[in-house]
Length: 619
Image (tube, rainbow, N blue to C red; front, side, top):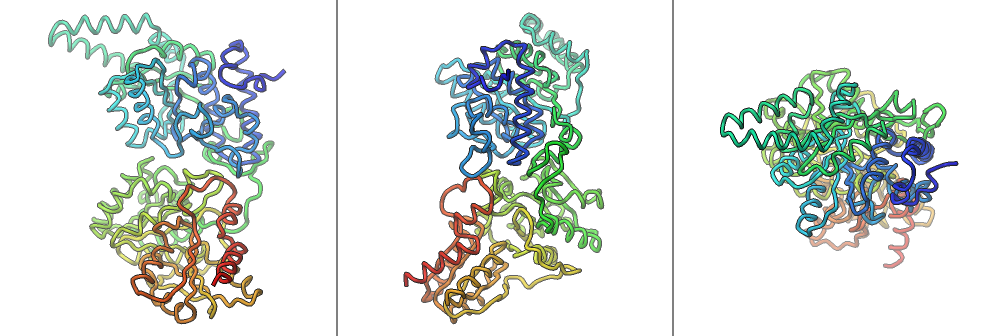
């Protein structure tokens, strides 16, 4: 008889016999693997964290005690244990539950996440709120080792060490970053030092030694340092945390025992837990990077399903960068812990001395690139659009203000699909367009991407190149990248009734929309604008000569985006015009397959045509 169906909430979990927990963990893994194979998602990290999550809900009184996840891509077991088993089959699908913790979804989702290195800050805020409200609940932050490469985590830790409030941080070391040390001695020492008797004795000894002025204080420091020799937590201890670990995070008994021992320790505590990413599913264990975030796959073999044969925008960027770097040794590439996702893994393997992975530190990546540029190199910073938000000040202050030639390759710009609002890159045109001295370009397809990358390096000024996730449009690829004129688009079709000004990956759907309109007797012109900044005002002026009816189409929010730039130009010109802007409204876009979202927001070819036809009929 299965255990998981009987768990409607953690209250049920805490009632079952402890010896059933390993069986429950097996069932959780089975459910996660099966669902991810159909829906895609973050598999490896969720499999590795099953015992941690189960033990936390077993030992702590959630939801009164609060668990805060960092990034949230490890929280599938959490969703299954907190009343969402029926809904889990539709996780990440349109209308279904999110792949990340969301406050609106459950009282057990105490903080909404999706970006890394935020959990300790949020948990500390909750702990201070608890203290002021004189509550007795506990606050636990669950962070991955990768998240500890982000500076925000250390800002939070130094603040927690100063405030000295009760806070437990679980450092989930999945052997992808921090070195492991889980042997018999380490396990025995961790168990010994987390017992309340040893903790009390240590506290009394320290207090006693500190009574004897400098000699006693020196002795206390020496004892602390001696303890650090056996434990890799010196940095955390110096920041004011009590460090325990490492402990085997996939050993349920060990996790429960240690959590029971540390949950009443006063002040900030960090528990170092080592887990195996992809635990329980051999393909994921063997290829943890591949199975970090997956599409559809065959459970038996681990092979991907439904992959497009078309080259992706990411692959086009990767190949173009290699071509350009082969002829220019000044080109350097920087990523923030996403070499495979941004396509820089090929550059890393070919030019390791010119490749830099700075960890989850987008702010540092930007200013580091500024330093390279200031000394004569040609850096490209490859980020997901949603993470470029994190280095806005560095782009403005350290790069644009000094007019330094740093290229930003913003992958996953626009809708990204099932990862949802934390990962949709639909804001970059808006928050970057306001910065002086930036050039902002968006290729219509994978071939144009390589030409705009060449343009970016030749510009010798700050340059933003944004492009979407997924397969391109299967256009023929030119042999060599060539520079394109800055601020100049291309007319694809002339029309006397209406002109569609399209940017980026909405250009080809706009062409098709014009064909659909032609079947209705509407002659629509189409311009591939290429540049959001500077705008091709000549193309806009020419469009006005053909018709006063102009449509803008963009894979970005309407507020402050490409359409806004066109509207500002037309308004300042005091032109006689009618303008329809197609893009995303002033709201966060939900998760779902990209094709469904494009249709919902009138951005695919058919819905563009329908919307334009309806608008023209209103005249």
